[in-house]
Image 1 (cartoon, rainbow, N blue to C red):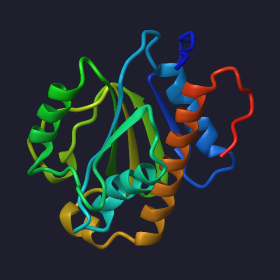
Image 2: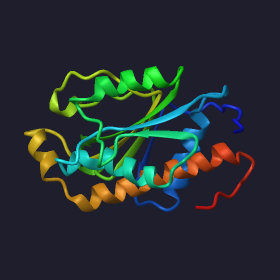
Image 3: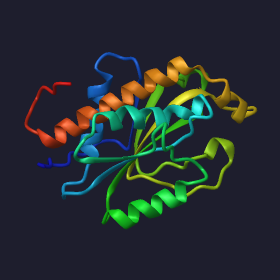
Image 4: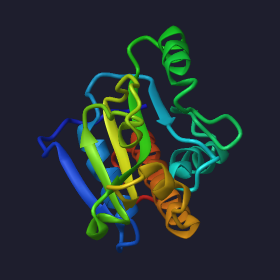
Length: 195
């Protein structure tokens, strides 16, 4: 696998999940943030299939897992979700199996009405369960948050009543973006990436 030269970028980028060429733009942003030295890449998709709004991570993980990427190790699918009850054990498993991996964390989040449908790519870790006031360890070298609904009053109920349509659309966008990122890791000199 070839790696690229790191170019300076901002620490956060926002994208509309259904914008033109959004998957390539997300992939390009993440690619610019990857380390120069070879690493194992682990994608941790956080959430549960028992809540529509919180299913963004497992849906993304399942879509990504189907493609069987040789350079991505995926944790968190609909069949085997990574959630509040097993996150610490999952992190321990990752630390046991990989020496200093580069972790891409994916999770749903709540935000403003005008932000619904936004995908936020950010350098650094995410704080899972923050919307529901859960005390979970931060995870990720970079993270992808999908704003699935509005925050404020009764966040748990808001996550439960989130429309599956928007969550599925965002999961497809994230999985496709990560697929493009994987292609760039294998073929870094290609200007055009084929699906």
